[in-house]
Length: 245
Image (cartoon, rainbow, N blue to C red):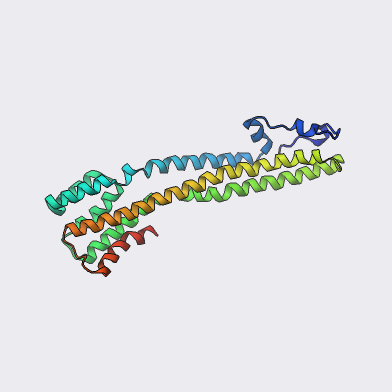
């Protein structure tokens, strides 16, 4: 930790040590945190990169919109499965790719169609979730790095007090502790947004799964597929629900 030598601080017991260590800017805070601020800063850059990438990848235009679902159902009623399949190919969204897998097997058995949709759903969910894991890792590592910096700084502060004979001077100890806590604050400032972003992206994927399940069941109804029994309907729903897990 980059602590100021306590022997150089005023020792008049009037709080001059605290005045010497005033942190008036972000730069002062970063410098007070010491060497462990470097990996914490690196974690923040990585987290921000993945947040931006996932924000672009998981926007509604890439997943599939409600308008697409309405247009698809109208196309299926007018042109059948072939027209719907052509529309899905033109859409190039994740939802369209899942529905297209079922439409390509529209003339095959119910089990074959369900298996095709389940496989396509699993691929899409895996692709959408691919870059979320780094956010989880950073959310766990950043606070630990901050805690390590705090423990390191506390050790350094007490060692300096012992060497400088600073017992009985609380302002000297407070100066060292205030610097040591900087890394904990920095680690939390990185971890909290990373965790929040992860759960927000997961919620978007979950909503995509539920919307695609509902659309698929409407497609089956429109094409007159076998959805009469509750067992078949629940199996159709679990095609994507299983992929989500």
